[in-house]
Amino acid sequence: MVILLGFLIGFLAAIPLGPLNIFAISESIEHGFSKGFLVGLTASFLDIVYCFFAVIGVSLATQPIDELIPLLKVLGSLLLIAISVRLIRQSQNFERESLRKSPQKAYSCPIMIALLLYVSNPTIYTFWLAVAGIVAAHQGVIHVGRQPALFAMGCGCGSAAWYFILIKYTSKFQGVFKPRVFRMIIVGLSIVLICFAVFSLGTLFIG
Image 1 (spheres, rainbow, N blue to C red):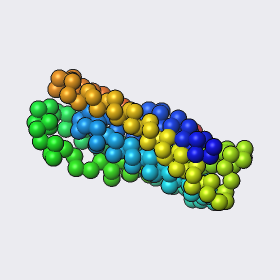
Image 2 (cartoon, one colour; image 1 turned 60 degrees about the vertical axis):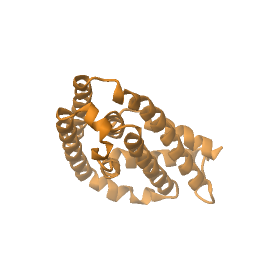
Image 3 (tube, rainbow, N blue to C red; image 1 turned 180 degrees about the horizontal axis):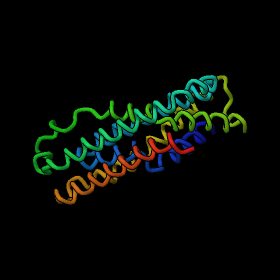
Image 4 (spheres, rainbow, N blue to C red; image 1 turned 45 degrees about the horizontal axis):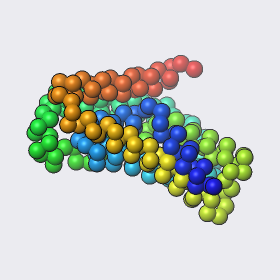
């Protein structure tokens, strides 16, 4: 029951459009299923870690985290802009046939970017602390025994399931779109990332 609860929460939490989803989509379209799903697996693993520590009582760390939120927003926004610029430059030089013939030239490992995107997003800390508080308040998960680990594993599996579905679908487009259409999609996704960055910076001055 605890695993199923975690699976549902992890799956639903991964659905909303955000920087990680956009980055995973762009990697899957540009480099294929394996690169895109690697981004998803990285996010799912971090979901397990964050959820586990939230459930066992990392609420004590909420105060220092709150103090770091402005810095995290700035760093995260700069990271989003840097990734967007890289994607736009890559799309301008994109040649579908050469990519298909020489997959080793693709970006070697998106894990680090996915890691930075995850860690620099302050809302993730708040989200998992909120989830831990809610499930604990309703006695869905207790803070002792194997339940925190099982719940966290369930959340990670649910997140991974969503990314598998998302990337499996979008990676099919890798060999379908014409280069011009492909570039338009990548540029569009990059613009959305920039909008996320601008919004994140804007929240520092609003409210």
